[in-house]
Image (cartoon, rainbow, N blue to C red; front, top):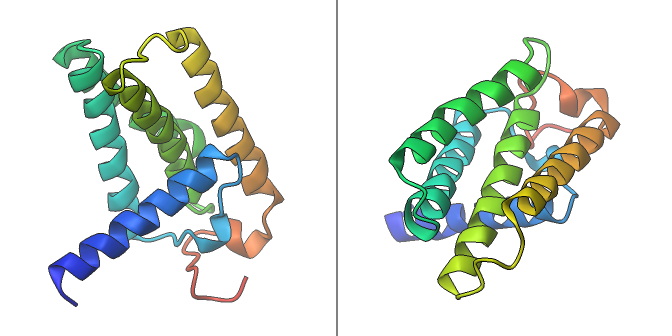
Length: 153
């Protein structure tokens, strides 16, 4: 597979997952519990934090680094369990990344003060709560450690 084809497939896949999460309908049945999925969601999360806090809002590197460290540690501490799929953590990172990307886009388009930071925080918490509820509504096989989207649920 060529690099261009892989990159376009990856970008499309991540955009699809972030769109599902942003609509409050994270598709856990299509999220594999794998290293590739973990690297993908962490990479998008790190990029989105940098884009929002480092580039768009100009909050400074201390805010970027704090978000890069504190948010994943918080999500891992709260949601990662040895008997549970990591896809819940991926969805939490995805919800945060989706909000960061929208905020960054609003700043770049000149509408940076469209909502207050508290309102964006509430949007992010709402998306994460919806992902949490949706995760536990999934069949046990989907919520189990090592779940692969290729295996029957």
